Image (cartoon, rainbow over all chains, first blue to last red; front, side):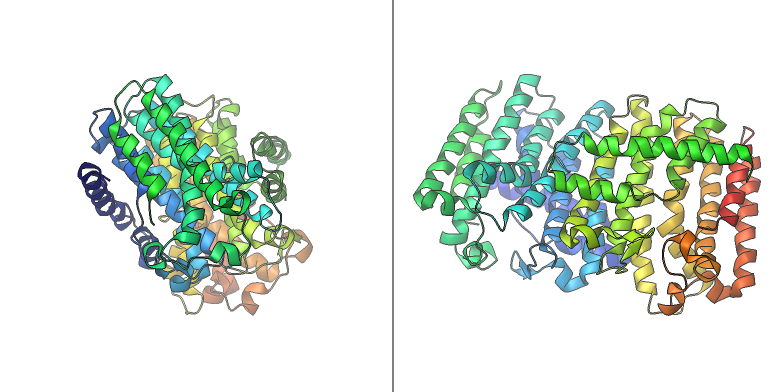
Length: 294
Length: 294
């Protein structure tokens, strides 16, 4: 990772982390709900999705300010999905990023409701973005629902649950992760492109780049569960194997999974080179996703 | 209830019930998720909220077609809230409208996700309404988030949970129901007014009407839990008392609760008479809410 990329990621992560809580703090609601929302929003993480939005605006030489609200909305949706995923009736996880999960701290009921309100408020953040024209807002919401709802992330979560007891084919596994992970990640690129006023041919390429990056991201996740460091990831390694989860290394062997990861990264980079703008930052982010250690 | 009102309610309920499933059926997602969403959407109920939207368009002599999408979106949000409220970690209810609750049929995980996707898709329905101008859509979403999110329904649900173990004052009880019940009900009137292009003075009156109707609706609910018929309500009566819930009859005596109900209905009717249009249908709906037996 070059110093330039490192600097970009660190400074934008900071902007995101400073801005995120402001949307919650100004809500006129009970403090306990705000605390539960803030707890998970402030639990850290890579902030990859919101940083991707800003990276797109940077790439198109537009003010990054124009992407900040949507970037935060995406991170709020990502956060709600983690809170609900961790619930006892779902993955039943006690730890997330090295901290107790939301329901462990606030109880299940408040965790469900904190997730519900993070999801709900995210739409308001886009609608009330002072820097975004009305027609763009409507497009952003249409695409967000496709990425996060029944046709995207939530649908993928259902497929994932249903696939748990079965031996899946590579195509089935791909289909799960396309929905569960790739679509919201792809949406970050797409939203950045929409906000930057990118031409339609670029928007279509951003969808493809997002798809490949999203799948690559998931393969790297599976690899890290075997080869990663517990300290870096913030949760125990080897849990996929204990839970007999369908993973890329299990289906393809470790070397096969690594080859697959590299394929998707190469594909993403090819489509990045087809954009109407030079995008060195995006090319570097591809490398980062391929090699990340947490 | 006059024959005319009865006819209005029955025909519009039918339109709503015919339209609601179409938004789910066309989703490109796994059938099990659609089934879980449809199960609760099709479980019946009064459809009061969506009918109120259509009643507003009727009152302003505008095509009711213009309110159908938003009406369905509101019913989807109401339905998601019922699914999540019924979860074991929340109210732990086995029956809803005489049928097993969503998680009893589909399991808790799918129930959480069916709720999440009903909430998410509802925003898309408003955004993709072919009869609504862009600026109206954005206003509808802003108001919807206020009514359904942390500053409205979800916030009210948190307050309700927190109030369970305590003896509440009348003001505290009112505050809970204003958020938990009245705001989404008021939104139905507000949304109808926005869609009908009602003048701003009417929009502000619709907020007040909605507030009083919403509180009245909740008081009637509390009364029905004591005096109602199990067959008509679809769930056991007396459960509030068993659960030591804070209710209006408990705080005010039964007669006090009935007086309070009538006060709110009268207030609502006063504000209805201040609208810039004649609204006999809305006046009749007030009577219906005051006297409903389920």
